[in-house]
Structures are given as structure tokens and as C-alpha cells.
Length: 216
Image (tube, rainbow, N blue to C red; front, side, top):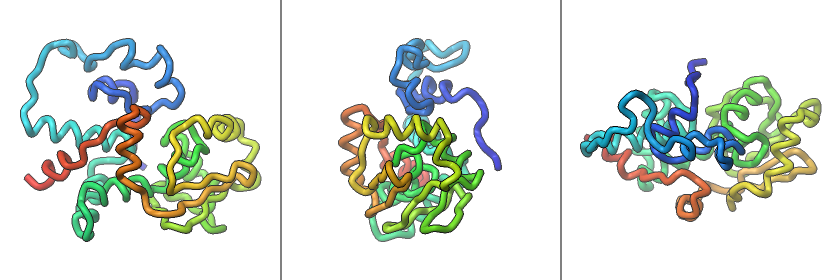
């Protein structure tokens, strides 16, 4: 399975904002963006004027980095969203939010999406009682995510669930910590994501720029 293996802090520095790719570390003084708020590399501190194309490309790359998907996957999500009747940008974000690895992360079972992907691939989770080891699976409203009984003592999961209430909460997700389960109650709401972006609890996303990038 292809994946990004370089230092993820470089991605945040390149974008100039926190993408919250390293869990709790992003909220401390150790965060790379806090310590070095400029792009990595020899010319990172040089002033640059970006073209309209570069601005759209950066926005696309930012969202791709946030959800941890490769270019082909991301392009497929865009064209799938374009075929739907709603706003393309919002439909695309809805699909990304409903990825199995993202739902596990949003529910609070893990501190990061890479952790969620690893647990999913290793068969620690079930959907509606059936094992599911595909991180890109699109969870449907009403689906129940359950942590396997033998996995409920994994210390990383226990630690993440202990801090789940302090993380951003979403109306379309419901977590049952006692039962080690969660449910996708409805489709994601873009306005709710905007409110969390405005409060700096989530990276700010301008999906219209991504639509313009692929529509050029």
C-alpha cells in the first residue's frame, strides 16, 4: 500500500498552518509550525509571490495531506463528487469525512489518521459486525463501527478514548466509549466544519479553489 513516509511536520510548514497530523504534539510548543513558521528548505524564508495556479495547487495539496490520500485517490473523490447533484466541493469533503480511517479518527479511537489506518488494516475494527480492513471504505449513515473485543486493551486506543471528549465534536458521529463503538448518524455537515475551522480546531479549507484547480 503506497503511502507518504517522510516527516509530516514538513507538510504543515510548507502550508504555513497546523494540519494536526501528529495528534497532541500539534497543541504543544514542540509543534514545528510554532517553532519554525516558514517553509522547509534552503529558501524557505524567502518571500515569494504565488500565482493563481500555485494557490489552487497548494489548497489541493493541503486537503490531500490532511486526509492522507494519494493524488489518484484524491482525484477520484473529486470526479465522484462532480457527478453528484450537490456542490462539488462540499460533496468531495463529505466523501473524505466518511472514509473509514477518518471516521475512526474523528470518533476518538486514535490520535492521528495514520494510527487509524494501521489499526484498520490489522483487522481491529468491524462495521455492522463484519471485519473491515479497507481504510478507504466509505461509511454509510447508520453504520456502526465496533472495536474488536481482543483490541479493547490496546493502550494507545485507551489513551485516545480518555481524551476524546476534549477533541472537536461532530453532530453526525456518536461515540459509546463504554461499548468501544461509534455510529455515523448522518451525512457530514459542511457548515459545522466551517465553524470548527473558524475556531482553529480544524485546518481551514477553501474547497472552491480545489474545484477551480481540477476545472482548469
